[in-house]
Length: 255
Picture 1: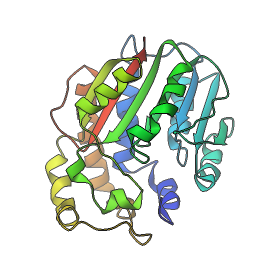
Picture 2: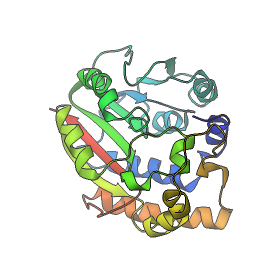
Picture 3: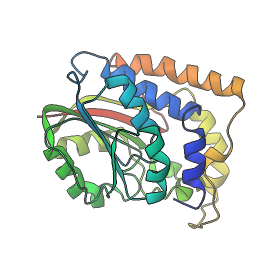
Picture 4: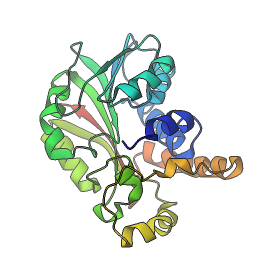
C-alpha cells in the first residue's frame, strides 16, 4: 500500500461503516447453520492487514488457534496489539506459510485483488489444502473491473471481480460455494457517482495517491451507512443474492 495507508486503516477500521459492514456480513453468514465453525476452531486470516478482523474473530469464535499473516511488517506491528494471543507472522498469499494443519476457517478480505487471482492461485491451493473437510473459506473482493479508481491504486489493487468469477475461483480450488453475493448494493449508485471522475480520468499509479479511508464520514452518516449494510447482510445471510454491488462476498466449503 501507499505510505500512510496502513496507519489510517488501523485508525478507522473499528468504526468505519465499510469495515463494520464487512464484519457484520461475516458474522451473520457464519451464524447460519451449518456454516458456524466447531467449538474452539482453528482460524487463519490470510492477509490480516492491521488486525481488526483478528480481534473480531477472537471475540466471535473463541478460537483455540488464531493466526494471521501479512506481507507488510508495518501492518503486523499495528495488528499485534489487537490480537495479543494470536500467531501473527510475515508471509504472502501467493506463497503462504501455514503453521498448523486442519484449519476450520480461513478468511481473506480484499487481499487476492492485490496480486490478482492468477498469481495468488498456487498460494490459495496451499491454503485450501490445510482446511479440514467441511472447513470454510470466506472471501471478500472488490467488484467490476470498470470500477477501478484512485482508491484501488492507493491500496495497490490490480484486479476487481464479478460474482461469477469468484464462484468459478471457489470451484477451481475444490470449494463448494455455500454463499455468494454482491455487497454494498443499495449504496452502489452513490459509490459509482463519487468515483466517476477518477474512473473516467484514469490515473497512473503514484505513491502520492490516497485511499477513500482518509475521508471518514461524520458520526450520523457513518451510523446510517452501517445500518444500510446491516439490512443487506441480513438478506445475504438468508441466501439472497444481491444483483450488484461494489464488493463480492463468498463462503466456500472444502469438499
